Length: 103
Image (cartoon, rainbow, N blue to C red; front, side, top):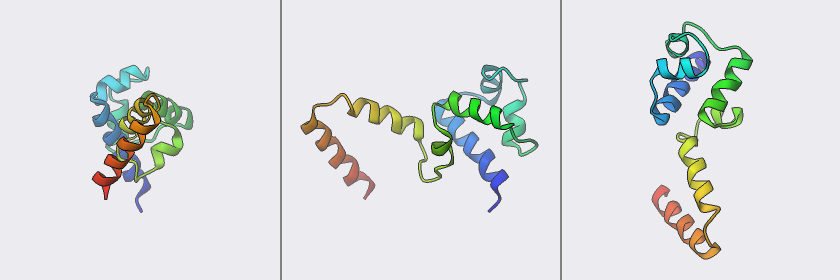
């Protein structure tokens, strides 16, 4: 597996899900405007500290970042947050709907 390629594609995926440009994200991280573009084009990799800032920016843990099966971690967190405020019976119903959709 080409991990550098996978890493850059994962950042692109999460950035698009968040709805921001590479330039916007770079500047929000306090970096040069081409920082994320260089990572997405596999010209560089972030430092470990930079990676943690990227995870924080996306609102995901490093574990969630590397969970390839989790294609929309930001959305999943919003769903989980909303579901945690539902009454138990309604939460069970929503879970059943989700399970029916993914099966």
